[in-house]
Length: 382
Image 1 (cartoon, rainbow, N blue to C red):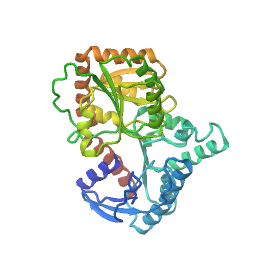
Image 2 (image 1 turned 135 degrees about the horizontal axis):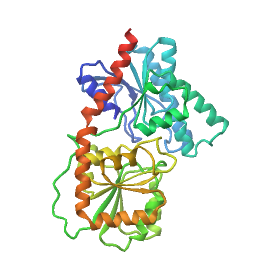
Image 3 (image 1 turned 60 degrees about the horizontal axis):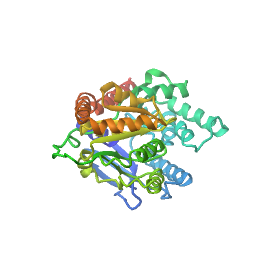
Image 4 (image 1 turned 60 degrees about the vertical axis):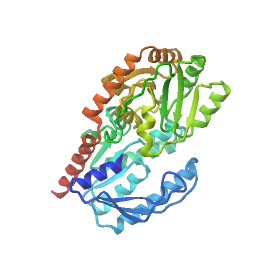
């Protein structure tokens, strides 16, 4: 998401310099040390290449990247506004140091909340000395930010509740988005007699709940009107694949991530799109997949934590169904209603694209980011 903001900032006349990793998402991806992209100057740094699926490996990768990017920032001219994201989470400490010793104003983009996310994932024990110390350190670093961007009102509430030293007026809720020129509804061929495709597309990670879905799929496994498609990877995928095999859920299929240029076609194959946030993770993360679903005009079936930015979004715009985590009977009812009432799927899908055009298309969202950046830079110049 932040790359789109950088591109649009460059188009708007900003001089944009990006410091990022030379390593791509996949282990075998490596990019040149410098490049120009859509008017932005890119500087890539190295770092450790340990297994990112282990806690120790991920920490080592994070720390070495922060050190390498910090060295690069010291060599580059001081910016009018430094923008730091929460991936990796330790980057906020680098921004804090630059704020203290060089007076560089910074904006922190909190796509995830730490250490709350580590506690919810079971990496840190609640109320442990390490958890309390991490909360104090993260809170102190974030309180130094000139502005903090979060992904919704619920995330803002959770951030302020966990870190009372942060000034509320410095926290700006800005929803994620997608590019409506790249993701859009495709005309569908007549599908009379074909099963309704329930698709989950994206990361199957710790913050997503699949036990309720597995139980519901078992309840409807003899219903030939349904099929379930999972596109993506993550720590929970192997568990779900094992459950599907053990329970003989033959109406399930699993697929790897699709290239970006194929994402529109992939999402358009769905009749209903599944979204979930596990209980305890509400306000800590917001799956950006929901905005892609809205862009292609598909109804949403959300199940998971009953509170949070995602279920609020579904209810506010009437995008589909909201089912509480653990309510297997409720999820089965929603699945069956989605199959039995195609006109309801059409209504929810139309609502989704309409809301997307009004609130969540790329130009609207990136403009909100740029207004925050401009305000921070202007205030620093006074």
